[in-house]
Image 1 (cartoon, one colour):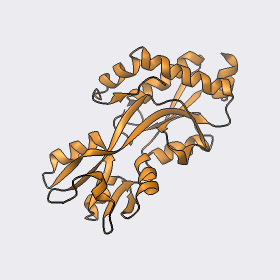
Image 2: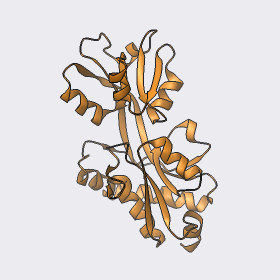
Image 3: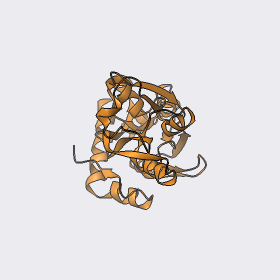
Image 4: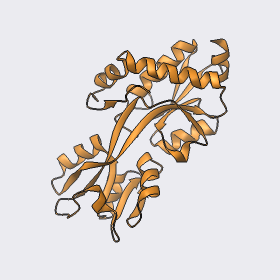
Length: 236
């Protein structure tokens, strides 16, 4: 295990990059973060026998930058081809859904309806759904900002994109909008580290994630953090 800890935590402390901008995966404040990603980071540090430092950010792109720039050793991000050259991912530990919010009177009834000329979609810059929609939308225009729902509201856009749980909560509090119930994507959240890690280190992370899914640890962690409706990913 010493070889693994030397490779994954070369400073002697495992620095885990936590994205507080995804409320399904992390909650709390930078001083007191909680959630499934925090629990997973603690498990990795415990298995390695090293102290843990949680480095918190409000967006996935900042979390990714911290790891690729050497300020963190571990990250928790959605698997995406645009990140594959920088991140060695495990299989996903949880699957969440990307959905649209639209004005209540909109004729946009399904994800396919959104991809047409004149439709502007608000997204959180650098998020998994920003990457996906930038890659897949052919006619609609992506408008980036701090949060997809905020961009949608502030600029009067035709649609906003986001994670199902917070988008649903937003729509419940704002009767002037509604959720397009059919998802436009599945977002596979995985543990990642930099691509220059030793193969044994990446294998250790992959095996640990599979163990924690199979044992019920991931499901229990999601339930404890109030995210019992999130879906644990199937075995790899």
